[in-house]
Length: 265
Image 1 (cartoon, rainbow, N blue to C red):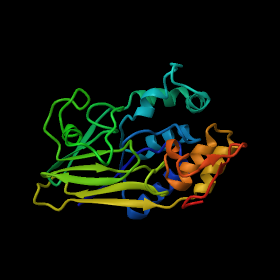
Image 2 (cartoon, helix red, strand yellow):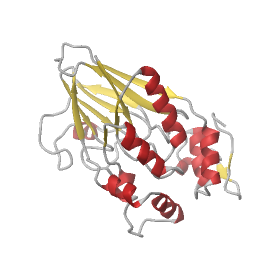
Image 3 (cartoon, one colour):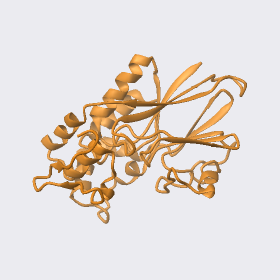
Image 4 (cartoon, rainbow, N blue to C red):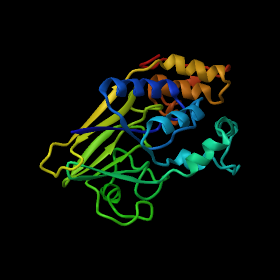
């Protein structure tokens, strides 16, 4: 049996990424696939690029990997420029050259890896998706190219881990290492199967949660003067998306530090 790891959405959080890499070392897993969004939102995107290049067999392009390296000003606020400038020119070139899709085979199952969907790195498929959205994840598109229909699709983007199987096809969101929005611990997936086997061979999908030092990561962001620090800190401590912070009464203090108590505060 071969065991491979599928990670996603590092978002510049080196503390979480290193905790996951250590967990992988303990398990003896050497093959790692990365579903993108390496930089942005967190303080050390360039270091996450370096570690991804060092440890990941393949990294596919995410939406942040697609737009963050560009110099188009239309969408950028101060935080966006900060994350852009934190990357080196070599980092930006590497991110822009990442593939959009990668396929592997385990136990006779074709496993497709994309960042957000088979349609686009910007097309979002949530946990509560429509039947059309589910079907669309398995279709051949301009992004995936022609070829056999996958049996399993792994994706990231929504930072919300789950698995759904319908008529022998399985959709897996692997969660987020660096910016989880379902539980404040890093999340990734292990796939087990026979590389040269058929569908009679065992096949496994395992979700792994890894605790890491959230406060140390927030301290790094503060020391580096990263904009949007308050929203970042609340997300890491509570796993609540920043657009929803006003709803439970979470807000930023005047000095940019996050206040309000969450499960990991």
